[in-house]
Length: 459
Image 1 (spheres, rainbow, N blue to C red):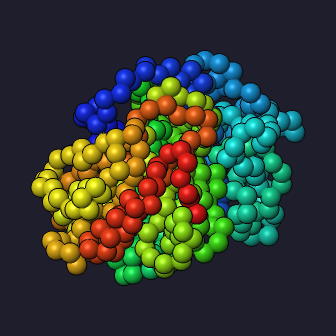
Image 2: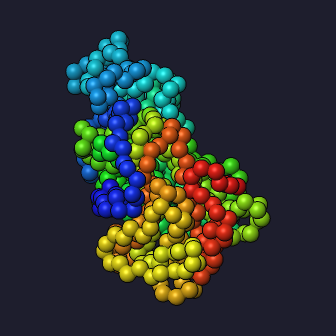
Image 3: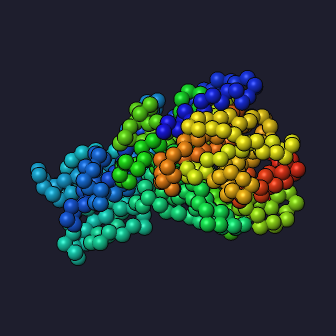
């Protein structure tokens, strides 16, 4: 699935305002490589080369590290130092890792990439930990390990620099619950929403790293910044070879609220000198969310209702114009009954769609509901917005459900088209319940005159 084409093809009909050509000169990518740790009977090899597929159980993708000392415009990247694999003697197996050729008989045996010498000014990086065998278990040599990690027979022996750490598991979920809703975001994929539950029903599809409930920014010069990861995140790709976006943070402030930020990677890295072994990252940007479950509204009444305020956040260079998914939600394929909500008449209009995309509305208060079947009692998810520069899109890819990791899906997307300031926020309201109740929640939002941008109560 080409996520960009699903997101933006045909959106121009949603808006009549003049579009200014963007020149995001400060938005420059860096090509990254992966530092893999391969295990061979108690010895560990660190490599920047693609490991064989047969090593799935013995390969750990530890860090993303720049492959060059310059960015994709050829400008020097500050504070970098080369990282070497070192060996003692020709053909010897006594291996070490260092930031410069070592004495004591060691010599370079390949450049592994580059690491930053300082953490300051490089959000998202973490110490690259050198580990040495402690002799207690028969382990030998040296290796790398992540901060907080432990490897039997090895002990941390210093920091070699800083790079983007990788999660070793497919799912590292942080959960927040209130108002019959539980949301679980995944620290292994940029903090994107991995599961959304209403009572006993789970809505989100996670077939690849372009799905989830997440945010994306598309520039007019072809960049596609993704909160979750790039196109090399599908089920046919081993976990260690996938490209999730690094997570800056994922945390709960209380029982209602969750915050996350990711350093976004490029969805199509091969368009920017990258590829299956080389994600491209935009270190000047953070994408993420501020999520409030059981949102109280401007009257501050606690309704214990399943309405969430989802604030999509962009932090980065100002852009004269961009297309933003704020957010988009890929749902499991059981949710394929579609409605448009008209707040002025408080009415629902069924939408017939099969393997296609529909621009539902733009430039006004509006909502869509995607249900698990026909009728007012069907379980559903809906989204409501109100902004002159935004509209709603639904996309149907109906087929066998396959559940959370099935290839079939349904999708709604909030699509904003205008300029971005250095700290930009867009508010969407997401409701999960039956169709009848979601309609009533949307009517209440309309009566409150909530807006997605500008002055509007958020707590």
